[in-house]
Amino acid sequence: MGRSQETFSKKEKEKKKLKKRQDKEQKKEERSATSNKGKDMDDMLAYVDDNGNITSTPPDPTKKKKIINQEDIQIGVSRQEALDPADLIRKGTITFFNTSKGYGFIKDHVSQESIFVHQNAIDGTVQENTKVTFEVEKGVKGLNAINVKVIE
Figure (cartoon, rainbow, N blue to C red):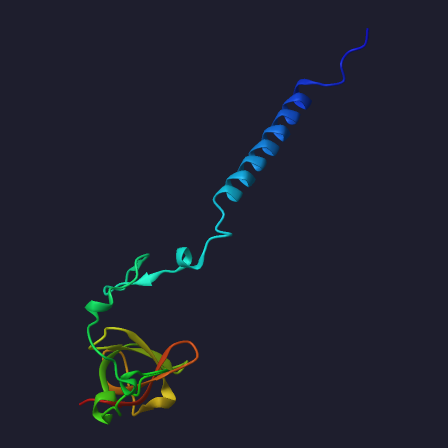
């Protein structure tokens, strides 16, 4: 009498496939039962309350606060006031400077951030722990110091 061609591992694989198929069918039925299709528009609307939270109840028109003027609405980037040139000048200390390579870093006294400085932006000679005034511009890799002047 011949032996069965199905081994234990084949039977286990078949059981796993069957289980996977049943799970997939069950998930499909759950999705169709909880589907949002066919709901009316009122069920899909969401409202924002006074605190900015999303709710399903519409706002009460009797509690309306104020009338908004069309001129008060700003679209796009708000206009910034022109900065005073004296505010752009920062003070800092040279924390590192390599004279052979011609660059270094300045530690800003206010923000304590390290800002790159190149020797072409420096008026005079500097070394480490020299106090300087400088302006900042956005560079490719971050902030760069320009118009660096030594404070005596």
